[in-house]
Each structure stands twice: as C-alpha cells, then as structure tokens.
Length: 363
Ligand SMILES: *[C@@H]1O[C@H](CO)[C@@H](O)[C@H](O)[C@H]1NC(C)=O
Ligand SMILES: *[C@@H]1O[C@H](CO)[C@@H](O)[C@H](O)[C@H]1NC(C)=O
Ligand SMILES: *[C@@H]1O[C@H](CO)[C@@H](O)[C@H](O)[C@H]1NC(C)=O
Image (cartoon, rainbow, N blue to C red; front, side, top):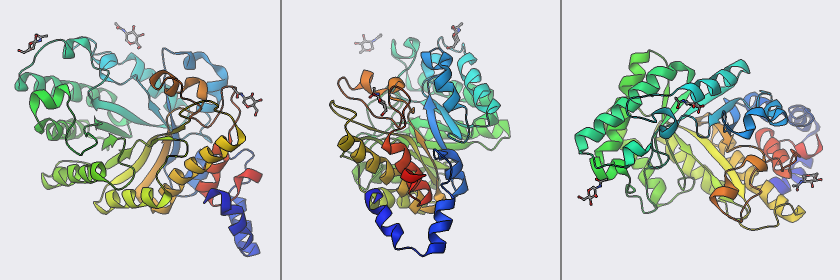
C-alpha cells in the first residue's frame, strides 16, 4: 500500500534502502525514466493534438514532449474514424501524421487508437443501412488504409475498441448489429493482413474498460483472446483502460489477478487510459487527493507486480484542464495527475513510488 510504504521501507536494510532510493533521486520523479529503469517500455499519456488548445499551450507541450516524463503518447481523437475517413474512401491523415511527427521528434512511442469502434464514426457510416458484405468491405478498407499509411510508426493498434457489454456479450454497435459477431474476428484478420503488408512489427490490441479486475466482462475478454488464438489470428495484447473513480478502484490484488489472466494466455497487457476522477466537487482537498494517490498507486503497482507482461502505463491526459472527464461526466473532475495550474498532485508522486518501490514523496 502506498500509505504504508514508508513504514515498510524503514524495515529494510541500509543497503536495500540506498538502492531503492537511488532510483528516485530525480526531483521531481521522472515517471517515464523510472518506468523504463524498472522494466517497462513506457509511462505515457494521451494527448488531443492537433486542433485543440493543447497544440499551442507551451506549458503543456513542455511536459508532454519531455521524454523523461512520458515515453508514449496516444492520440485521444486524431486517428478515430470520423477524423481519418470523413468521406467514404477519402482519407485524412494530416492530424495523425502531425501527432506522430511530434512524438518521434521527442522520442516517444505511439499506441495508435483505434480502428473499429461504435463511437466517433463518420456520418456516412451511420446515416444509412448497410448489408453485411457492404459494411465488412467498409471496415476492411478503413483498416487497410490506416495500418498501411501509418505503418511501423505505430507501436501498436487498438483494432477493436470496447466491443463488450457489462454482461460479457457483444455490445450493440453498427458493426455487430450489421455483420454479427464475426465482425470482431474479421477486424483482426484484416488488421493482421494489413500489418503483414507493411512488413513492420506492429502489435494488435483489444482495448476496453471494465476488464481491469476479475468478473464476467473480464472473462469475456479472455474468451475473445482465446478465440482469436484458436483461429490463428494475430492478437498481441489487451489494453485495460482503467478509468476509475476516487475511492472506487479495484484492489491491487484484483488488478493483479486480472492482468495475470491475460498474461497467462500469452498476450501483453497495457494500462491504456488511466485516470481517477472525483464524482463530485471538491476536487482538491488533501484527503481526497490522498485517496486518489492511493488509487493511482494501486493501478501502477499492479502493473509492476505482474512483471514484464504488463509493458507500460498510459494516463488519459495529464492535466485537469484538458481531461475528458468534465465534458463526459458533468460535475465530475480532478481526474489527472496535475491540477489546472500544472501543479503535481500527490498522485504524481504515488506513481513514482509504485514504479520504484521508493518513497518519491521525499525525493
Ligand atoms: C484534415 O484533418 C486536419 C486535422 O484534423 C484538418 O485540419 C483538415 O481540415 C482536414 N482536411 C480536410 C480536407 O478535411
Ligand atoms: C434503415 O432501415 C430501417 C428498417 O427498414 C428503416 O426504418 C430506416 O429508415 C432505415 N434507415 C435509413 C437511414 O435508411
Ligand atoms: C493547484 O495547486 C496549487 C498548489 O497546490 C494551488 O495553489 C492551486 O490553487 C491549485 N489549483 C487548483 C485549480 O486547484
């Protein structure tokens, strides 16, 4: 536990304490550097660039592009369907290319996000009735063009995003309702073919929320992975979104157990969209921020505990003023690791502790 860590550290030998503390001498803790020094590929963040205030906010960009803090950035919106294929078979890669240029210039990896989802689709997709073969061709063309264009600049693609309902069945979506459950497996088949055509090593992921602890939906996600594997279709990893509420996150043990379940199937896991929101104001009390710090700690610690099969942690943007939460959950907020004026919250230091096992509150 984050709060008891200092006490337990006091019980360590002098040598062990010195080793642990030496990983955390940065002031403040450089989260990506600490993650990479401790066996992860990155500590990352989503960013909504270009076309938003983030693009020209120098204070924001200075933190985002310092790869001591972040080693991965995920496009919050720019690679989604409505932006990349606004008219049928007319592709717009401007935003995605800008995002990749920014990441590469600063030495950050990119998890490309996403190919097949029920939200943020173009009007031309949703405003008419398709036959299953027609919509399958639309899906295939979209996947081939995006994977082909961005190629090996993507560390990975979230191929299908949020396919499952809470009861473990496929959610209603234009894809499922038109094509049936085969849409899911076809999407991965098309993505695999497209990756093979690039000749690059691009990982294919399934990404969802509510699959971060054992339960019906998590079991359903395991079953999707198993079914892809039994059909010999490429699946490299599962993204656990981890959009949590302060005081309401699964325990470390539950998050470890869920992650171990995926890893036992032979796929990687990534914490892809971590944030921990207050469901009501106030967002900045000492007690609230302490609970939030513990909640962030628990997610990151679960990724550390399961070893290299959890390859990294990405937060869903890092400063409250650009968080998706207030617009998606009216009245809620305070979900990220920097407050509106870019002050690091206790959660920031708790993540440093989880990454190192050292008390970053004092370093
Ligand atoms: C392509 O996308 C960029 C970035 O979102 C946008 O600024 C531009 O207007 C788009 N171009 C067209 C032709 O829609
Ligand atoms: C799609 O089909 C349904 C049922 O036949 C019909 O009610 C609806 O108007 C159609 N929608 C469009 C956009 O054509
Ligand atoms: C951000 O944190 C600083 C330092 O703790 C504080 O002065 C400021 O009021 C905070 N901003 C908000 C919006 O809470």
